[in-house]
Length: 293
Image 1 (cartoon, rainbow, N blue to C red):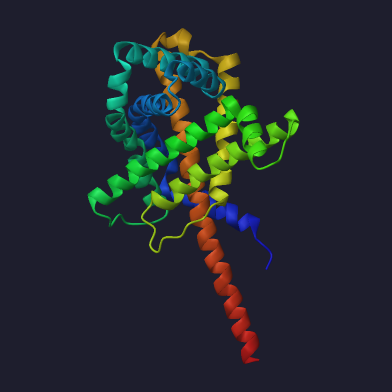
Image 2 (image 1 turned 90 degrees about the horizontal axis):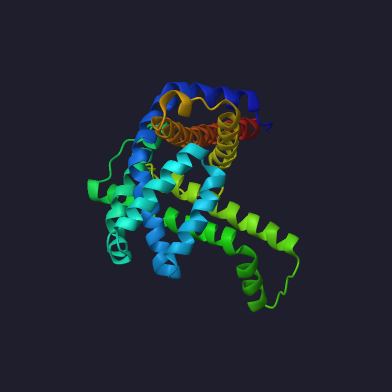
């Protein structure tokens, strides 16, 4: 049976309107602002525990974030994190990372609520269970982020060492760069897979590594982030109009776009599941008619 792309995208559009993903993304983006700094502090604490070089890692994390986040928003994040770290000792950060994890899970909680709406699911899990799920998802995504950043920062050396252990001595920087890209992409896909599989209250539960929604969300996020940065490079009027408040507005807009692509990915998955079930039913009906003849 030929896949009807026109019908599929029409249903995605109608589903997005029905679930009002634009308004829901604004709500999720608002919660993200509360979860962002605790999450970054949690990442820095984990980096410090695992690699015992928190200062170096913080600087490298800032370099990477600068490439992804709009300039004014990055400056706000860098300034805030630097002030918090300077006011806190390493021991306090290490002991306080559990509190940071709890606070960061608020962002996952907001995604859970929004994705339940997108998938037309009702939350039947007890409070402790879905809160534990949010905490574990936050931890899992944080570890995947650390792994991805580690590959980005130390990719060539790490991969060369790893391949050397299994007897594959690869010296080509091009091949190592391709492998690094594949591994980072796999980490991003895994993060979205965890989010779409465990956050909503799926019944029955079904694990999928690669989903059309995850692919759509990653592509849209990269396009939106690049487009937003390009827009701010040439047409940034927030700082001139609102002064220092402009950085907060830009950060909120970027978080809103991030929430929007996550929910759009959920809509794509929800429609794809229904589309697939409908096609299977149609095929069964056709086979039944053939058998009767």
